[in-house]
Image (cartoon, rainbow, N blue to C red; front, side, top):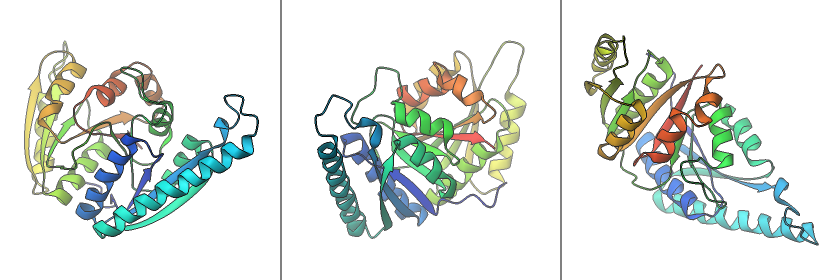
Length: 267
């Protein structure tokens, strides 16, 4: 197991939307559980200036900057009240580029799958999608809120060690339970894989059980999501993530599940 996985520094992008407030709430709870430092980030989106033909883009810039200072200040007050370690960053540029760069020094990102621009049915917001694709750390995505993390679903298709390790370390921090799930495919019996991963997790002192289901993997995972507080999904880093997100399994799991989803790219 990867003993170096930690959640010491959690990046929390905010934009003042209701959905980002939910992310802040979960991040504050996570800071308490994981003893983490929260880094709240507001990015003044320079690509949005004069987007709608504004006569004076400088006025729009200062409006966004003041908004950023306001929402960062509010997040800081909530963190102070919760006793959480925190810092605030007001950045300028292209939001997803800034966040992906900052992810190099983060242990996790907690963010909403939609922002002020909203989200089309079954689609991840543009910024969230690009952050998931380009992040150097796991991305915990949310769209509705419960700050309780106890029961963790770990869907497995292969032995994705980073995803398994993230699930293990999360369960250890919250004293949680893990269910290892795989879905039968034609000509492939996943039971030996499930049994092996269950045994590895049990050796870590975590309550765990395994399950093999039948049907469409996405439908099975989404259907079970209401019984869990978190889903940890591992994806292939080698170009596979983009094709998955473009109308595939991961995007549908993220947008359709009833609980938060952590996306972990295989290193």
